[in-house]
Length: 506
Picture 1 (tube, rainbow, N blue to C red):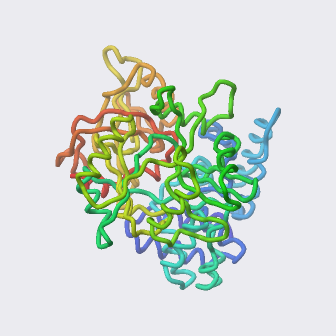
Picture 2: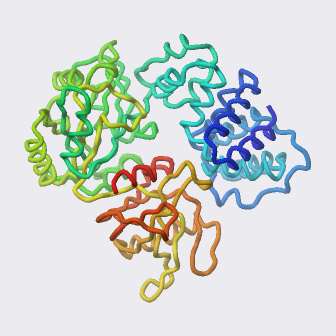
Picture 3: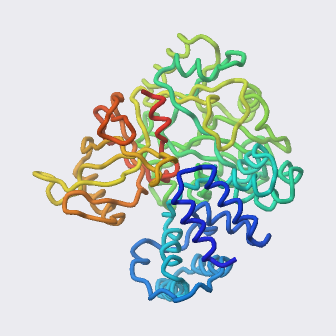
């Protein structure tokens, strides 16, 4: 398939706000692709490369050769070029990568160059996220959407089950949890207090819930097969070599094959959690002498010695977890039906320095990759993970820095994919101001002398005291007393909170 055809569909998908039309366009292109290219085409239509890292950044793609006069590039050639770049390392690699960029982009037309640059830095903005590609795949292959969703969750994304979908429902049913291959993590929705969370999680089930301490660490999924251990992040990145202490604990468990879900946390000498940034740095860098150790705390088990557990009710998985993992490596959990006792447990968790609790239905299976009512998080202070859309030049003492940030929530119905909820300059230290000035200059797409528009990539955690209706902002809502808690480099813009989540908190 010519890259021109894919780029044309990507542009048409971006131009429509209709989810049905997006699905139709993507479905038709999948059907037009050769069977051997369908998975690659699905990756590209989802706005990402197959290679997790290529060494390319926005700066390295600002100066490009003149575009080609006609389209000749094929999607397979593009994939091969990026794959070769991903293997470059060591002395001289920068020069080789630059030459590879010049060769690839020199063969692309102007529209193709624009799309290639966007996909290389993860900036394809077409409103076709994972859910839309999943729906399009189900339509193209004429298989049930539920079957594609389940297989995609277990495989790590819909683009990994394209061939299975076209092989039919039986092939999709054969996609199971594989020890060593991380699955999309189950996610939690939000509630303002324990009462509301219990009501939401208990639902139509037995009424029994578990209340877990919500640790402010890094989400980890641990796979062990014999002595082979894989530690993955919530985004499925492999960080095994960075957390040897987690590997050692996993190997010490009385099991041969196991998959665990949990958090890794750095602790102070008194046992209280250290700042999130100290834990996060361990996930981002190699182990160094004297670096802060992390302790794993597990809250779920998805597989044990040949038996998949994801469809078992939570209370069964909790019992298995208790028999498998010692108490010092399990998340604190209260189980019951009494809201007053659940509230008292929450108070104790907060007093010990943790950020909140997650209320979980005791009857629910592990719904990989989904954010529903079975898990509901409660924090004493409302927080949202939003995306920075723009930033204003500072004045007075902040002159010379970029200061007031414009905050946006994800909105699939918006042409840009985001909707603005307000601004804030509160909570910023001088160190943070210096950092964000450099960071947003890297993301800058326009500067009118007052407002610097940036690519919507940087996620920021915002605390706020409440919501109020607003005619000033497109989302119809504004945050009250918003202030910066921290920047979340562990989350992508696609993981930011949606406008629907914000509205549910009103």
